[in-house]
Amino acid sequence: MQYLIFLEDLPGSETARAERLQEHLRFVQTHLDRILVAGPRLASGGEMIGSTYIIEADSLEEAQGFLQQDPYWHANIWREPQISGFSGVAGRWVGGVNW
Image (tube, rainbow, N blue to C red; front, side, top):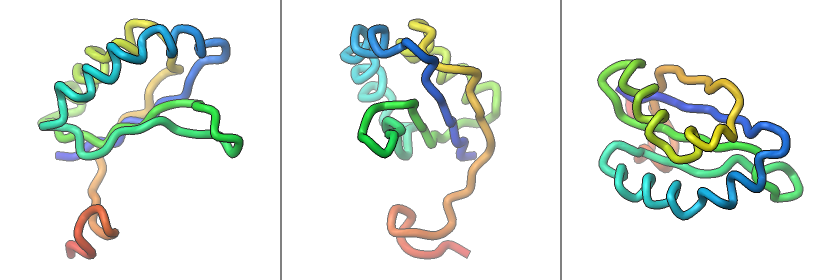
């Protein structure tokens, strides 16, 4: 099943984010087999304000466990995550429409 993980940075987390960036990128690269898409959320001015993952996992608990392995999780830069099931059924990234 696919899960959408929506993350919002805590105020003042910029330093912790920068310090853990390389570890976070290694984590992402190591888990590309289950990540469908990942990237920073950006404000209108281009500054990072959070992160988003869409991953494959067998359960909500597995998706939570995935997130808890991320170095950014350990750096405590995010508010409480929003994790929900997701079904990518239309768009260029899913090859058109899938219904």
